[in-house]
Structures are given as C-alpha cells and as structure tokens.
Length: 126
Image 1 (cartoon, rainbow, N blue to C red):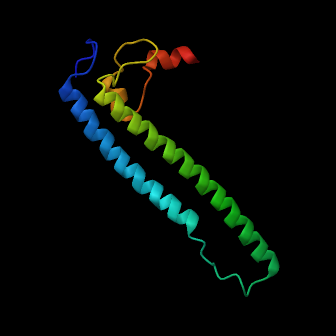
Image 2: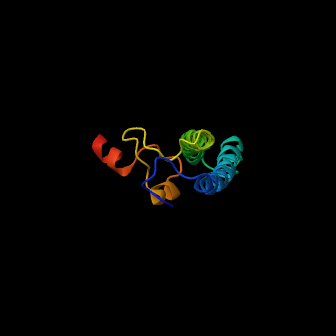
Image 3: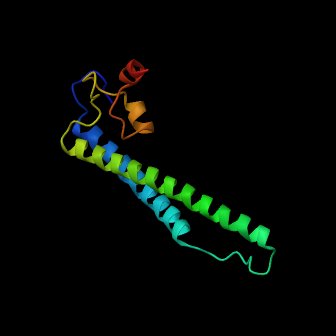
C-alpha cells in the first residue's frame, strides 16, 4: 500500500472493507455473548446456604451485571466506530487523518481499522 498519495486506492479500500466487516462480525458475536451473560440471571443454588454467603453472592451478581453492562457499552461503541469506518470507505475518505489530512499508515489501520488520527496527530494531542 502506498502511503504518499492523497487517498488509498479502491483495491486497498476493498481490502480494508473485508478486514472491517470481519471485525464487525466478531465484535457483534462478542456483544451477543456479553448481552446473554447480562440477561441470563442464573440461580447459583444459594438457597440452602448461609444468609451471609447469599448476600455476598447477590452483591457479586450486581457487580458482574454492572461490569457486563460497561463491556456491552464499549463493544457497541467499537461496532459503531467500525461501521463509521465503512462509511468513510464508501466516501473514499477512509485512512485520511482528520487532523493532518495525511494518509494514516496502513499498518496502523490494520491494527486499529477505525482510526481517524495518524500517530503524528495522536502524539500532538498529548
């Protein structure tokens, strides 16, 4: 992939699209697992145990649900960011840094396909 042009070629964009669609599919699968864990309120059989343990177990369940809820929110944001990257591919603006206007390094996009900032722009934020 050539880094010195104003945008990625249609061939490059098609490759990124495949990568992103694969990531969306995996992320959606993970989100479904998180949601099913959140919804699934299994009884761990604490009915016949001491009240102290039962209270601890219920507290743990609440904490676990909150944790799963946060995971689900992060996963939904990740999927939304990936879908926005698909829109940029369709608009042929994918891979262009929104701060510098330069192409984001293809290796960075392979690792973070929803990136909208180059490493240079990211470092300027610090």
